[in-house]
Image (cartoon, rainbow over all chains, first blue to last red; front, side, top):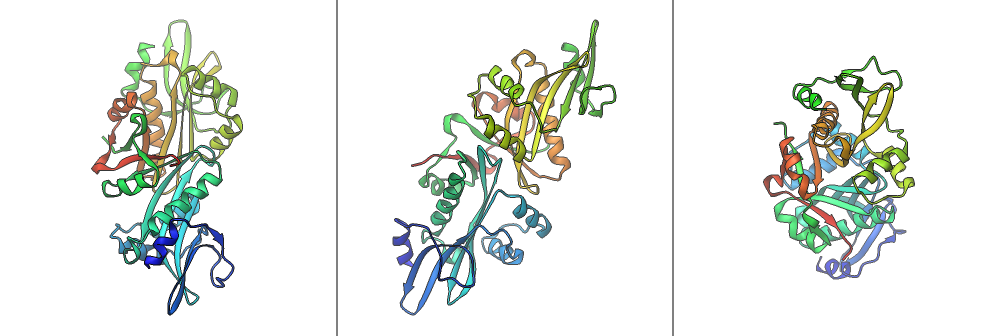
Length: 174
Length: 174
């Protein structure tokens, strides 16, 4: 696992050719002696909703109606899933999505990495992949709303808090 | 004009029947002795881009490529325009739009009211209309990024700054 971390620092995303079960993009290949495992990213939005729910459960998020989750996946501008592929079996280990006007702005939501693979640089890799996809579509304004405990994580990725005093606000009925 | 202000405090949005040139929703009717004018809201996204640019110019916004503006209007979840209709002539006096995943989240962008009609409650009316539209679609999380000088304006509308420490962040290449 530590091997991944080192690799991510100068990683290049390449199209996978060896993954037969799964159509996506290979981030890195690691060979930890006995098993060969890959981290694969996909922008395919036809995810197994139960698998996604399981991932969100693992980090303690409140459950949401699957009907609405399905709609949100369909109508997000970008859906990114991160998979661990080992011996041709894949496991969903990360997820992020973004809404957008397809032109100027994107807002990233629901960034999650499975607790069993956290602290290995995979969150950073997931975000870098997401940003790269948005930037490749010429979207200049990438935004998000960060919980207090992940502000520093996003800061290290190049996100700026309240630039020029611009404040994130949420509407509540008054 | 002052008459509007008073009316907005207990306004009810009703479908217009008297506006022949323009298909939208009537917010209020005012009769200031000689002319009859209406404020009409529309969610029609096929706006005259030059008219919109003129409105944005009037508040000093940097110009944006019309090709991208067109795309942003097409791909926003909601586009709201506010019109002053007088003697069957209409004038674009306000605008707002929102991106969304059509399920959970919406983010409001590009809120603008023409300087000649500011300070009359029309910005508030525009936002209330926008929020009402989003809420009618069962979108629970309405967000925006507010410039410092309009934070109090949004606060009065029920927007909360950094709720539970959640921070708005913008990505810049590092």
